[in-house]
Image (cartoon, rainbow over all chains, first blue to last red; front, top):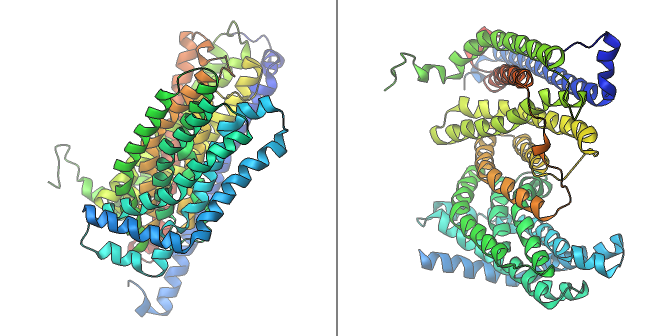
Length: 64
Length: 222
Length: 247
């Protein structure tokens, strides 16, 4: 497939809005999911640390 | 087992009779929803004739969803449900009785009153008859699938909206077949295959869902 | 019984404690493979595959549309299987896998719908047709929403796992019934006469691009689900000793 220049490539034969609209939103959706995944992990780790500190303060409560 | 089933049906029917306003409210809601539609889309008789079966069926779906919340809620609150779980009788049979009773007090009245609504939309007698039969054959599915949603959301906050979210997508096949039956007859085709498929779905739901409902009740109450 | 012919002790890996580090080691591999496959697939799709005769360049949307649609349906079935295993054998990890898959499945469904609409506009002249596949895909999105909403509404995670398992099983039995009824409804109401049979006759390179991207999506979904399941393990077992050591 020879596009004959980048401007032709970006124009997508007149369908630029549809093609790049699809690929762009897909990329945004996946990037958003990755962001949410990382944030969830950060929060889960913070919760683990908080639970650890709490158990260090009153050891009787833990492991129940 | 049959005596358990009949006892549960009789008990739930008596309870429904004592609280007949609940049953009436569902029915009035059904009629109001159907009546609102011409005010929204205009009173063109041809248009109304064309959309009548779909409108009646959508209203029946909404009325069913609305009535589901009280299916297990009062039994849960007064502790009867726990007794049912502990009873020696198979839970699926008790559940079957409760759902059949629910259908008798919501599905049947909706089916009967749909004849009047069909007149309001001026559809011909054959199509009206088919619409009525399709409701009779299809509303059991609404009660059975709906009971799955009701048992899963038992005692949850905002259960009402949640039930509709869970259950309405599952109702779609019944809606398609139900509305399709009367539309087929109105356009001069045979409605029987639709009615048979609806009846088949009802039987399938009757065989499969009581187990799911019983499992869901155990999960929700434990 | 505990050790099968493969020599792997599956019971060992069904415990969150042993699965957590294993998943952590697997994620970079799946994420890397996802990136590699997607880049190769995009290269094939944009620079090797020729212009389609009837649809022009607009057809290039299907390189992501079809893989996303496949994954959306596949994930729902896999999710239901994990949920069923969790319900039947009371294995916590299976239920966690089911709830880790649901958001990714919903995202794949959304991508399939969005790209389908943008593909439909130049191809069919309208963003949305009440075509059997599009409509079923939308209903699938509602089923995912129902699963996620039920999970969010139940505070006790054990109850949420089991309730969602029942819902997923009822849903997975219903999906074929929904699909065939919608298909039937679609053929009766001749509203949308266009059909997906008018999809392009695929050249080999087109098919290759789509296949490689499908592999990339698959790897991405596995990586995302494993990442999420690790977070779920941390959230639920935050009081366990091994979690505090691992974290």
